[in-house]
Image 1 (tube, rainbow, N blue to C red):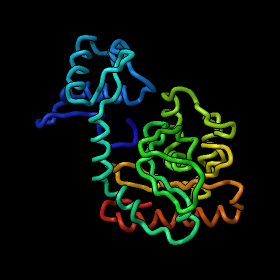
Image 2: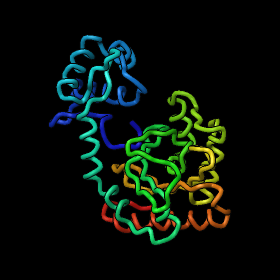
Image 3: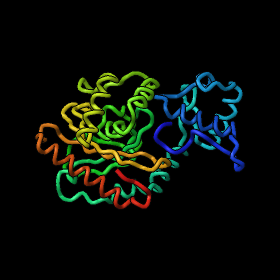
Image 4: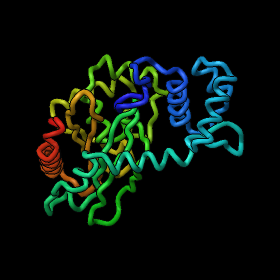
Length: 269
């Protein structure tokens, strides 16, 4: 999994890899990345492990409620994963700082802000701050969206090299578009990321939903920290070019506020 500290390796106290733990982590990742239940045969094939080994590990994960058997066959994530995810967010410094950082009384305070991270070519919402203005899009913590279709996802992608972008999208299941305005090809994405680097913040022009405009900024973090971006969703018809620049500057200021409060954690940007 890209962009998170975590389950890519599993070690014993002596520093040696523990194969069964690593395989359990790979199974959880594979099931978590799927749109629906995953059959045992698919897990065995895609991960290159014996069916009997996969069955034994899945049975142990079901007992721990990290996996659950689906009514239609196969496996899906279990309820313990939700509890662990909530505890992770509760214990995350950057999530608490995002929820507490001052927004002032301007446009940002009126609209919903999100905190996101990257998993490969997908943005995942870690936290949200509802605005005072009704309407707009509804975002859910844990929701996954193609990174190129969201402002915070685009901001995070802009911090990666072109080679890394191509590598991540070569492993993604197609170039998904959420609207007719979504970025539709890797070349278009690379051009847009260059514009984001020059501008200083990302603009999602109706890529998430028609009629909506998103702005996003990424924070630099230490190598062992989760990369995060913040974004705001606006009704496009209410935003002039001058307002867009001003709101982008406000978003950068919020990121600077996060960096200031999180300086001890080496968050900079």
